Length: 212
Image (cartoon, one colour):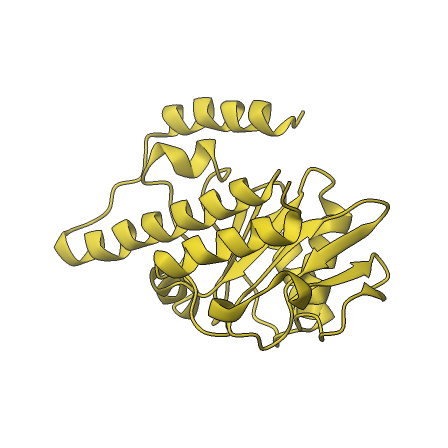
């Protein structure tokens, strides 16, 4: 049976295949047992990622296992895991259309049903802060809230899920929705879903997430 490291490697292969991941950018993690999490290493060519490259840390940020340096975004992943007990995996990517919205500080409105049902509604842009800082971690977690995706100003995005597969699916959904939004603005004015539809879908999202 494959472990979580191999599951992330398989997810990385899919991200590379779909063009959502480039070279050494981005990072992924999965919650472990007893207050630990496993994260990808810093500055690793993702096309060459192996099981031995991963780093295991506790919730104090102390390395438990691994010979490589962990991703610089450890504070970001840790902050989300501490605030969101439902989150089992965190993906941070710099996919193209998501990045277009991020660098223009443009939230992604709800243009398709899946954005509410799967991600929780409009995808907000968090305040800018320098990569790898506690400030960025808090900004991301604040804007993420109970949703499953957030845009990072002048950077990229974060998606989360109850599994590695779900975090991956949400990353793919977010990029595709961002692409539709960016391209639709060329041809006309994108039209958000009606409020009555959003209200029903938000209830469905809350039910699926186990929210009150």
